[in-house]
Length: 127
Image (cartoon, rainbow, N blue to C red; front, side):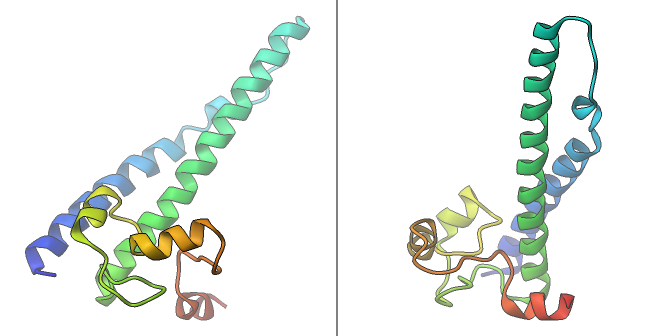
């Protein structure tokens, strides 16, 4: 992968990181509100649940984006973490934070191997 391509992916990932970080700061939607009307409380609880799910999704995606930025820094970006084959440029353009090639991602989706967003080395370093 060329320096220009890596820089392009870094810029995309950093922009996504900024966007997700801004989204995660908005936690006002998960505040518990009380009303006198039981129907309103049910509606507010549903809206709160949706906001929590969105925060969870954004938080998980932010972890993946940060892991991809780490792979750019350590020189392993664009290489599948499972089979060590190169990830296709089309896949990286579509999902720049992906840790797996399409074949290994399909296997991970079928739970054929234990998928992880970070290699074991990062987990060992965290301990």
